[in-house]
Length: 308
Picture 1 (spheres, rainbow, N blue to C red):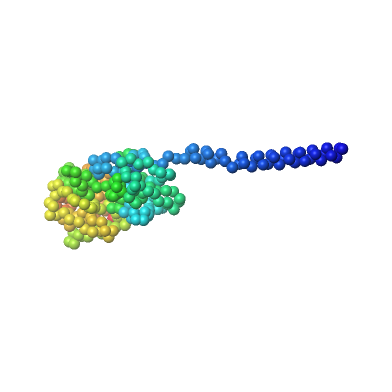
Picture 2: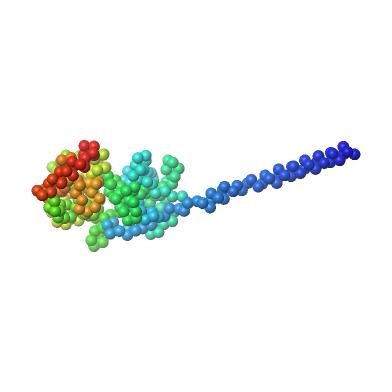
């Protein structure tokens, strides 16, 4: 009798243990971490359109920062050729999920997978980037950097400088008076334009390439050109190795200087004894006697551009 009771107890105990294992198994299927991860997913990036005096409508990110496109990328197929050091200056505009857009045709918006697995926004097929030197909304310091980076328009094309009468021009030459250099030539944004002694005017030829272009972005033209105070007969262009058209004045290719950050800056004057502000006739702007000392000092202290 004792043995029988013992046997029954063993069977009941075994049954209870078996029931405990079966009931535990289904509880593992919906793990808690998955629910937590989903609820904390980041909001998708946003594309917005901002209206600017210089370039009309341009594209910005969710924080209002200007978005750019890179001429060395491709749109068909969408491919980014900015990597390694390039990404330090040009962080890609990333997205997780479906981006929200405002003022942009949703059909033009897409993304590509980068080598690190992240998704980069594209517009009209072109990968989009911000510029590290743009520290807040409204800044557009990346426009025309190295002649290959341009602000993105809402259709994915390059934003064009706004001109009078609703027309567009990729570049405009103006003449302004400088207390140190007399009349000088500036671009549509009022930035000073320079010429390089190592270039040639007859024929027009640029000898600034590679590292040189980081310090001296060429003044490019991709559409109609408006001039004010400059003899149109002196204005022309020369084709660069990448196919872009660089403005010339009196035959001399024109450039900006990377250290000039606002209208009126002439920090590139006499740099390394080869770079000079352009006068309206394409010749070198002449420094007044009272300002010659300061200009010479500025030229000597602005070196470090690989011989350029």
